[in-house]
Amino acid sequence: MRNADQAKVFSIVLAGGAGTRLSPLTLDRAKPAVPFGGNYRLIDFALSNLVNAGYRRIVVLTQYKSHSLDRHIATTWRLSPLLGNYVTPVPAQMRRGPYWFQGSADAIHQNLNLLRDERPDIVVVLSADHIYRLDPAQMVRQHIESDAAVTVAGLRVPIEQADQFGVIETAADGHTITAFHEKPKHAVGLADAPDQVYASMGNYVFSTDTLTEVVSEDAEAEESSHDMGANIIPMLVGSGSAHVYDFNSNEIPGATDRDRGYWRDVGSLDAFYDAHMDLISVHPVFNLYNMEWPILTLPEPLPPAKFVFEEKGRTGQALDSMVCSGVIISGGTVRRSVLSPRVHVDSHAEVDGSVLFSGVEIGHHAVVRDAIVDKDVVVEPGAEVGLDVDADRERFTVSDAGIVVIPKGVRVPASPKA
Image 1 (cartoon, helix red, strand yellow):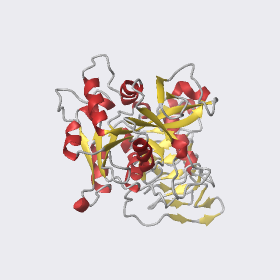
Image 2 (cartoon, one colour):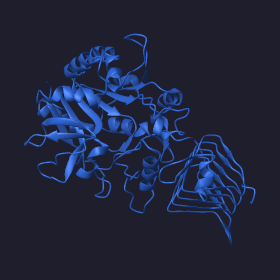
Image 3 (tube, helix red, strand yellow):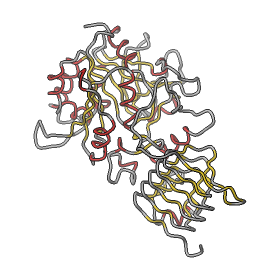
Image 4 (cartoon, one colour):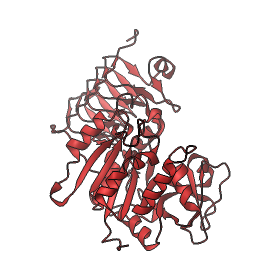
């Protein structure tokens, strides 16, 4: 095996999940294509981590409703082919028979031809729909130095949250995995921190021969769910060749003490909303402004944001908020919100604690509170969202925490009293 700097690394991003818990945001788009943070898509975080680390031979395995995801990759992530760099989507192609991907492990098994073509030493496998910064090169380095067959990224979480994650148990050395439990009711704490456990982050580094062997073996197991975490990792634990990588040890250039070790699974509407709120505090819990390890995307060519009118009761302003290019706040007030490109907020309108996707129109005297509003929604003059959750629940999805979610392209009429 070559050393970490010489190893030939190939990257696979798993982007085939249906994302049903994020509905209606995933009604006609893949989960990794869901907009996030104004300018970005969820997949931009995994891809940024790879290219920032110098890993630029990347395939994205797609399946459900992948058109907008494929288009985003094609237009945003065109790397120069001169040095063999690429990011390319690979849809389910039924290479192994007349069926789609049956799970994350099966997705890789159906695409083993990619490994035969590239012949890498190491394969980095990342999930496409988490919010975090990770330098995978540091994880690869530990993988090679420990002579592991697989290295699993582990996040330290309080032991009382163990039933929410796949939990990794380790030997006395702190990194050899001795057991892997899916959402255990009774977990064993870490040797150096009994009140914590390692939660699997869904990110892996494999030696290529090992990955090829285990996904092929798993494909023959009829009782398997063909999942990387539930099936593949437990197969390797017994041999002592599965190791954990402590995510908290990952050193990101430009990271602050406040956002170091940040990771969010935005698989539910409330988690998605909360991750946005993490962005807009004065000292953000996740700092998008770290230009030493940038989150990359290709914004639309739009004019700067514009704030107009300064009159009593009619001042265009945004407070404790993030506002993208092409936004016009015309005499309305925005607080604690994220406004994506081309949002228009009219006079006397109020937007508070909300996430507005591209092209949203908020009419005169309309009020939007504690909401996620998908693309091209029109909130008509005088309409109210988030003030009466029971009434909102009759027409829209409302999350467990009371966040109102309005699907793409809907017109929200004013209530009769307006």
